[in-house]
Image (cartoon, rainbow, N blue to C red; front, side):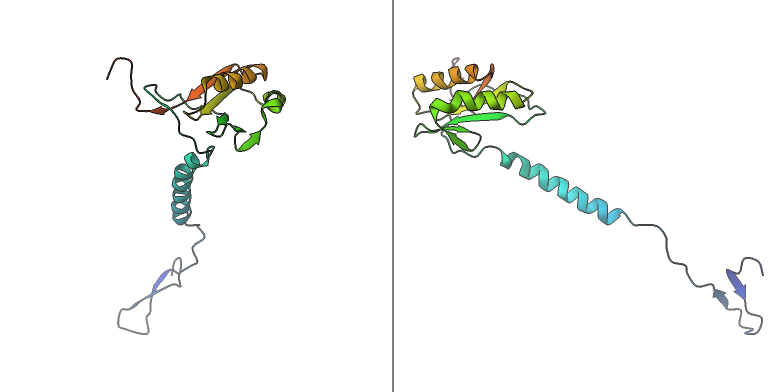
Length: 155
């Protein structure tokens, strides 16, 4: 009998075939692992946009389109309706804004910053903060607005 996997019993006479006991499978089934990873990927893709700065503001509406995203997380400065200045989620007093911005600029690769200001903030206050951003080492300032506002062409 060659191999010993299938043998015919000469005693039984019925022609039954006896099979050798099955061996344990030595391969890992990765399908459940891939399924879990795909679900986690989708969860993180949905949750990532919700992790941005959460200072509630009433942004002005414009017809401008969104800027392309970058590798480094953007620095966001927010001006609330009450006049508070926020770096990301941390409130900062106006006199120490330039000092804090210089410290942040020393640690960052990019000089890009997004300025979010409530629509009720006076223009003068917004310009003061933009001057502080420039003095703090941030020359690439993007003003954040909501899309869908009026256009100059009337469309």
